[in-house]
Length: 144
Ligand code: SF4
Image 1 (tube, rainbow, N blue to C red):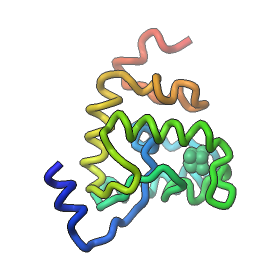
Image 2 (cartoon, protein in one colour):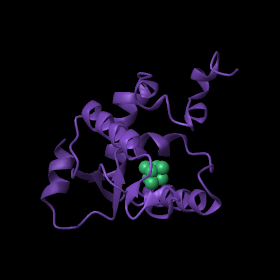
Image 3 (cartoon, protein in one colour):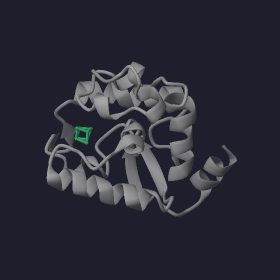
């Protein structure tokens, strides 16, 4: 929290906008995505985020959406669904759209509030990529 306050009060602007539900997608990203271009780009964004830059959390199109084939002039074709995913992640992590913090701080909130307690499916269990997004210890009983 202190770190977040410090970050918000500082002049450096965030390097990336990251939409809230992408905190979950990034945790399980395995190089697969909507197109080769998209997957390559998401891998590059993930690598950059691993350097722990300052990010702004958003509920709108972000650095990952930028090359997605579902991004139609800045609006996701699954807008209704993903906006609700974003809303749930913000709510459960105690965040608001526009919050600025180091990526690792955001990542920790997503892990602590959603992924480790096993709450992810409650948010995005209906996503087409759901089958990829389990930790090893969760996989038993999930595979058909
Ligand atoms: S445009 Fe939609 S489907 Fe594509 S990355 Fe963004 S939220 Fe996901």
